Length: 448
Image 1 (tube, helix red, strand yellow):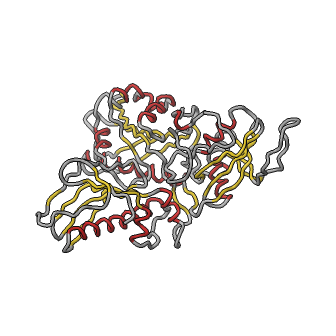
Image 2 (image 1 turned 135 degrees about the vertical axis):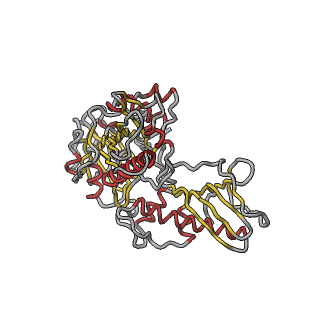
Image 3 (image 1 turned 30 degrees about the vertical axis):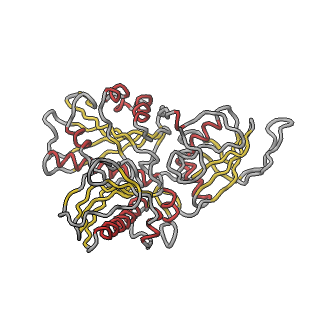
């Protein structure tokens, strides 16, 4: 197989790369240690805990077969995660699926001479998956996952108190016990250390304090913050009454999405809280799907003119472009005091690109002939067919046909970490930083 393999081996802790080694043929069915490599749930292109149970006569062959089966199952699960409406993925051979795989981790395994039972995490190459989704009768659209996980802040309000770090509430405990799932929006629960409490308080979280939200996001290298607030009595939740959770998702680009999750009554208190955690995750995924569906298909390039009327216009344009999932790369061709000329690499039709840009308050239309910005100013050597303009914040969503519940601008945008919005000067030969996500082998300059 042509994949990079990361295996958790029985015995001393450590990871090994290469092909799977043969299992002990004469040993009884025994459990392998999985403490050496804990799979991360903060990766939307990873499918965790894929169960396999294979019988055979050769332990090496059985393990190889288990890995192939896990990769096929993981590909089907990833397809359902990324494609609106789900369904069956396009038929791919074992070798074709292997080319999409970046690597795998064996979370746990039991091996004997004739049987292999295990749980495997499979990680896929994002760009290879994007290409494969639109091929061989695949999907016309897919959902671009977040480039980075979101920090989840479980806030409990009890008797007028707002509790985030002070006590380990049942609501926080339920989130800490959350198992990695088939999640489109990866979530990270903070450790609750002193640095977390210094970064943001429960009151800051409820109020949506932009500076505090930015600090906790930067601490976990996250793309934003989700505040999940619920009211609980001192003695814990009442399963007979159900639960209401107010959920607010904050993006580093200043967007905010509010939802209310109603959890039906029934079961025990722990079961109620676990259902609430699952429901919040589902609602976050559904909301993200509404806002971030983009076209599949091969990448294409177009030359775009960006008029500049203020010193900060180029920096703001670049920041907004980084939030457009349809754009996979942006190259700066030339820049002057009056305009910039860029090449956009994107997927889908120009009309679809225009809608995606509008959601970030960027106008996209046929370009008018370029003129000199001041007497004696040289005209661009290359002419562009399209023009990209900055729109007032909040004005683009309506033109993009935003649906109810889609992201709306915050009153005070969350300050993004400096690594997401570099301010170093750019000359005409420099490749602008790509959107903050894994772009495979594209020659784009990544953020430090």
